[in-house]
Image (spheres, rainbow, N blue to C red):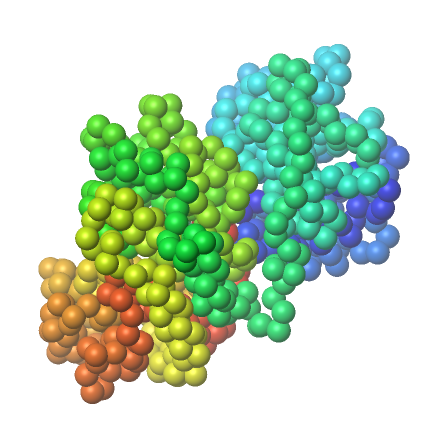
Length: 602
Ligand code: F6R
């Protein structure tokens, strides 16, 4: 989703901004722009489309020791050069980049900016025009910004240039991520540390409703009431090389391949000195004190949540409900007496999930975030956190975060189950079973040739496709369908195989691809019965079955792993299938249309 980079220092900001925007490309965007300030002279360059196009347009000449840059994912106004950021105030004095959504922009425009000339359809332009209006009324820049921010309803991360103060950069945030990066004789601002890792690994967090006044060699943070804030810097643990593609053609393929190594990293991270599974006692206490867990997540993370429900219920004996964040906040079910809210989020920045976090915290409930990004908003704002240790996930289509989520949920379930004296958890040798799963995952990532062939045969030209399964295989079918549709644009449904005949089977026609996932012994024959039903209606069926359950003619045999951990393995050929289907259909695997990596608007 939208990304921000800002720089103030002694070098030409141009290259730093463009590099930063390139690092943010993975988040999804439709246009981009930069503004450079050189002794009260502002140059704004914007372009629809890729950063490479912006780079060409910027050329070699542009210069400024202060600058701001932005990648935009359209919310208000179509993707176009006019709507791309940075936006300038009417006189050109103020320039802004903004992430987030200003909910009351229309009423602000009506109340304060009657007659003002607007050049874009964005909510952002209202912010910069308001700053200018208050500055023209006599307020100092930081006061004008402060006054504007107090009027805004919604989410924002902003970075502002004032032409009349060429030695200062202003920044602020509310509900959208933004960080200060520090250096010698320079400072940077970024919505994601990855954008500026080349410049620095030292960062300072900005809290909601704080204003930052940044100079080359000075950082001031103040609340909106003008109180000074002192905050120590922290060192980012991600390595710049973690976010490079290396020899891989796509980040998605690299991340699929990384999954066995991530498993091993997770096993290590959650093991104590005696080699036993170990979870932070405070996290465990929260879980043990709860009478019901409410898993709140979106997309792929919610699919991992469904598997987590099975794991926690079977191994810890605690009831679990899984809810989609965007629904839960606005249609809350009756809650149990002592709920624990478990947020599953790769990025830790998903606005739909965060709005639930804010609501349930206001209601006084306890919260736990499971995230891949330490320091992210949901990490900081929840009472407790657990980490995925998957390393940066760059491809829009989530792969290694999903398997990491399932693995960490299994660890949480076993730790809680053991603490509750649950026999199933005590007898489950999870360290060893996760190790076996990691080896099975290795075999699966090596099955590329076979899966590429299947993708060519089943998906090269099809209009639609189905994934079916029962129990945990149904949850993997949902994830497989999401993966395929989001990067290959094939209309795909993940379905509980027994439910097909209750309506959806009407969509099966000659050659419709139906992928069946079979990893559970107790439902092997039920699913095969459902496969026969679709075969009888002309479908092109393809079966992925676990070793021991396979039948002649099945297309792919998954190495045997513990029945509760099968999603770790069965999801991999599905990820590869999506990858190769997208390649067959000439789709941009890492940057699928209309999508963003980190969805920071509701
Ligand atoms: C799909 C995908 C999305 C995310 C969803 C939640 O491949 O990546 O469905 O899973 O947007 O994102 P996080 O986990 O960052 O909250």
